[in-house]
Amino acid sequence: MTTTAQHADHQVVEVTGGRPLSGRVTVQGSKNIALHLYAAALLADTPLQLHGAPDILDTGVCAAILTHTGTHTVVCDGDFDVAPAAVLRPVVHHELGAKVRTTAVLAAAILSRAGQVDFPVPGGDAFCPRLIDRHLAAMEAAGAIITVDEHGRTIHAATPPGGGLRPFRVDVSTPYGPSLGATVTALLLAARLPGDSLITSPSIEPEVTETIRFLAARGVRAAWDDDGLHIRGTSRIEGGEFTVAGDRIEAATMIMASAVTCGTIDLDGITLPQIPEGQRQVFAAAGLHLTAHEGGIRAAVGRDGLRAVHARTGPHPGLPTDTAPQLAAMLTLATGTSHVFEAIYPQRDTHVAPLRAFGADITSTGQDIRIHGVAQLKAADVQAADIRAVTALLLAGLAAQGTSTIRGMYHLRRGYGHLLPNLVTLGAAITTTPGGS
Image (cartoon, rainbow, N blue to C red; front, side, top):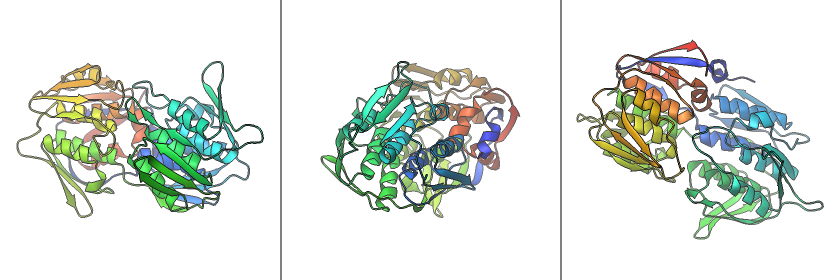
């Protein structure tokens, strides 16, 4: 199984800046929500079809991981079709698992079905260390015994002989807030356990609430109170159909792309309430106008242009950390001095040095990124190291004077299926050539 994205993972992109974006495009299904639903699909006892699967590298990787377990998986035209394995192979493929961040979540779903699982340390973006201790704590709370190989690269989780998983209580908080991934890991473990489990300090990100909505339609009961998230599982989970919500991160990226080019765009496939409140507040403070438009969103910059802001990432409904690099790129052209404080991760600044190559006045000190707006960016030849950094550089290229070369397109293909064609549809001057990733 291949996706469109897989045919172009080594492209180099050339962007000629200065063209206002205008027109209408459709936002893809949410990358982050879809990746967690692919894991949840392993719980189903009958065939399942997910609609709106984004055409990205990570979708293909997850489909291959499921196939390796014996789960029949086909991706075609935005549908992710899954039929349960007759005998589930309790392994997350090591090479494939090292390519995505949701490896531990996939492992939790396999553990809940098979009573054991081998899986690698997760991969994905490398902008900072991202621990999985809360994932492992959830597995242990449910009764699994965790062992790690001598190299620290392979994890084995299994129920003791003669035992099985049991309802549990686990805390998924971290020094930087609730763990989104560990909340879903705990949720998938609890979903197939008859009885009551409790997740304390849970994340309320859409990835969590959409997974809950998926499971609730299949008989898993979830309730929130001051103690946390209560889950009453079931011994059988039906398949059926479910649609992946629109990608709020791609929508925000497109909105900022229009802003740096002084354009006006319409986005379908997402509604204004799906843009987190914290994101909308920052956009408004920066001079962007968002309005509901025929079931979608219209985005434009006010006549006074972009303004500097002080922003802080945070858990939903705050400013999403996955939009912070793009926000920094946009603010390089804002009047005044902006600060973007990264409160979710201890460090997320792989975009800072490449943005300076465009002539941006931007510095990083710990978790704080300072941006003093400049009148004009200039073309640059840059390399990106992760998904959101590459989109930040793409935004800079759209605004810069001249033609920029951006390398690291593999990362873009992991998160965005049709971002480049959509930008071209809106009027961007973008060409792709073969090259190293």
